[in-house]
Length: 167
Image 1 (tube, rainbow, N blue to C red):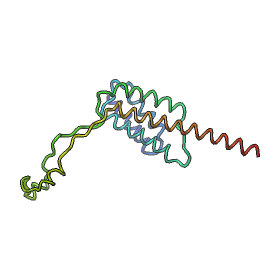
Image 2 (tube, rainbow, N blue to C red):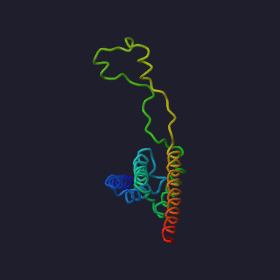
Image 3 (tube, rainbow, N blue to C red):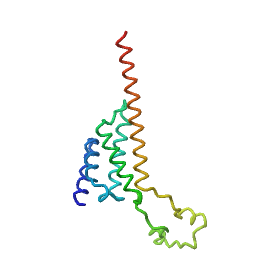
């Protein structure tokens, strides 16, 4: 597990310095085998790098494609994560009831002195927590959509090249 964490950190550093594709590959290798290394915390770091790759592809002036080799690696990785992550939550769950804040106790404010709307505003409502499997499926769909856009863009460029060559 220590090697997994070291490789996750190194991959994350590569992503943060702009070498996102290499960093994502390191992160995917760090989580191999997924059955032993996948958890809420490790998924958080992997997910950040994958989202960084998506952001890089989408925000470039022309849609910069994810290479076929990396795309295939991502599909295999995300399918494995989706299969293993069905019972793993994607967020660390906190306490179900809010605790008194230190500032209110220092100020001498008691709960009974608070108006009802104040009580309702700080109550924690349970949210539906996604699993790692659900998030991996969402990321997989995003990468597939990006790949489809890339193929449409390359067909358009081919048509433009053919038209300009015929003139």
